[in-house]
Length: 229
Image (cartoon, rainbow, N blue to C red):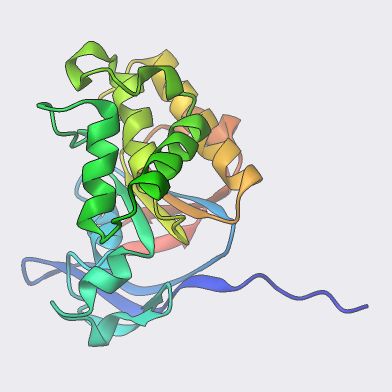
């Protein structure tokens, strides 16, 4: 019996990552397979966030080859970018929830924005996503009634709504206390173990990266390099 390798979700070859016309990472070779949990470490200004923004199409690839979730980054434009985004979930440091509506309404808005129309399917999907992040009992809560850790759980529920091939999280614990940060890393670890979703996390939280094992890269001196931790 032959074993098959998991599909490749991210592939960068000799890639150049730039921000505002300045090269921040050069000769990037980066391959991520389905179901992997990958950490990208690095201090502020080392290109970590620029790399992630390039992966989800917010920054253009400045050179080399890049392919994410089946989309070639060199050919990405304003017409094709939304289709790439539908294959991924993006989580930010500041949660980016709509504060004038409930948790459930936040998730409903995200689904309707990606052309979901069947109300029963929407309700079922919201229930499933909130259950995955242990937030079912908060579906009618307003964001201001939630702790920072709970708001970030809702952000991950939103990212999971469309069964994404890939979740990209940029400093998802940057605004959280140590206990909440630990719980978010534990959540990421569980998502990777229980699904085929690939997760790439930009972080400087070395302690939790050591606790919840994944593949680790480091951004420093204009290079992205594998790192043992």
